Image (cartoon, rainbow, N blue to C red; front, side):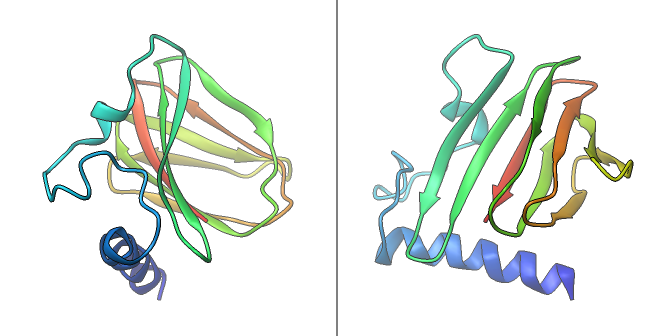
Length: 127
């Protein structure tokens, strides 16, 4: 079931570039682009909104090795997908989930959590 939701979300993103606001600079041109192209600064943690639709958005997240996206909450449920690298997702409940390329976790709304990168890592956050 989770795989179906992720696939549906990714399809929505691809179709959404034609039907709603798309902040991906190459989207309108139909050009292929990697997530790395959205991170231009030399910062430990970087985010970039890839797509913003009527009912949600997708955010690219880059975390340098040994760094973390500090503890925070999300007002809505979300999926965090590891695209590249290795790290872990940890919650205030004490749950920790190791993540590597291809892994994903469901993020419960209003649950404090953090994301830590053991290697340089790229994630997609779908809300």
